[in-house]
Image 1 (cartoon, protein in one colour):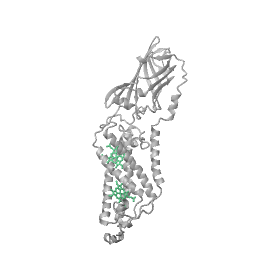
Image 2: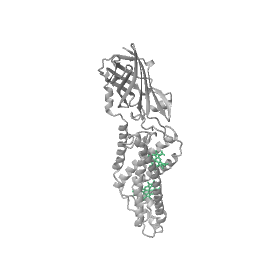
Image 3: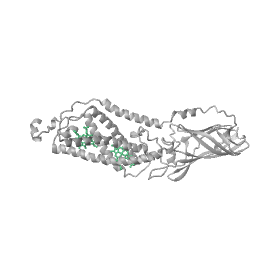
Image 4: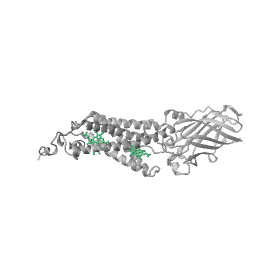
Length: 436
Ligand code: HEM
Ligand code: HEM
């Protein structure tokens, strides 16, 4: 029996029979269902993950949020493919329907496209602005942040993250509303109008159709556009994380101190480089057990607050050796957002002729601290007591870790359950040295 023989029973009126409807191209159909499944899954996961108990890296909540973010970014990329593909391959002519219905259907489609972009984008802006949360990596590979956001100051990022969290949350309900209308329309076409519209986007499942107007063209442009956007964002994220070129060069220029001042040898066993920091409102201490110092200083010069004494100091601190006595801190502080030791293993403090002697035992060194490839001016007041050829030095300086670009992703004040680390870190230096 042929289709033609059964046709009169299905539709006596104007709507054309199922088998003569033209369907969407295979690419459009594949993208429609891939994106639909992803969005429905993301909505479900989004609401479910809200109830998980927060935990650190490796916790179930972190794992599920990372997947939510990666699949969400996938929706954004697939939507780029889909929009470019649709512009190059208009859909097959629609079945006849009243003007108002046609308008509503088109409006819902346009709004769905807007939401397919807005939903991932708002989530992604939120994730990029969040402080004290986890990095955003695409399925555990490349770091991906919305360009320009991760480098904003904490005061700007906090309200941005909160605002976009609210928008992301509200848009989820908008997309649910649109989806209800969209599915209701599809059901009406299928069971009331019986015009074969569902078969256009789900051929085989809801009946047979005529082929698409053509197989489509422009896959290179459609997928190329998404790949280009992906590559540009990965490149921007990597460039933002990479140390700027300038100060690194400065690090290499460490030779040639002009100082003729006497050299001092540090007694490592009697010297220490320690720091005090606050985590979630409690005080902790840590130390750098391994560091080397080249010190030249004329301690015999008379005190003079206006003219520096002859001297040169260069302290190299291997950041990877940091020790706080707490493995949680030691493991995390060496990571990318903190010391990032794989990219810049050492911090260098260098003073070129900038040591002022303000009284017999009081000094102030004005030097440059280079950490994570960026140079920062630092004033270090210290006391120095010289007895014969031995000198004992003690200095303390409070540094702003956020200004140094250390732990930018972790809040400096408490808010909800999020982990936070105080911005001020006190560095305490004790040196015992012998004159050469
Ligand atoms: C989040 C999930 C979904 C999204 C974002 C979505 C989005 C869209 C969009 C934007 C179009 C218009 C395609 C175009 O002409 O450019 C479309 C078409 C269509 N969708 Fe969905 N859709 C979703 C889920 C569904 C579901 C669950 C069904 C069925 C129950 C469905 C049935 C249809 C049908 C039948 C068409 C074809 C309309 C026509 O031929 O003009 N969609 N969808
Ligand atoms: C179509 C794509 C997406 C959908 C449908 C979606 C949906 C949702 C939903 C329903 C929630 C729960 C909202 C609430 O409880 O108030 C949520 C939360 C969240 N989404 Fe998405 N999302 C998408 C894409 C993204 C992307 C691309 C990212 C980041 C790259 C992201 C990051 C987040 C985060 C971090 C949360 C948790 C917010 C919190 O801290 O409570 N989402 N999402």
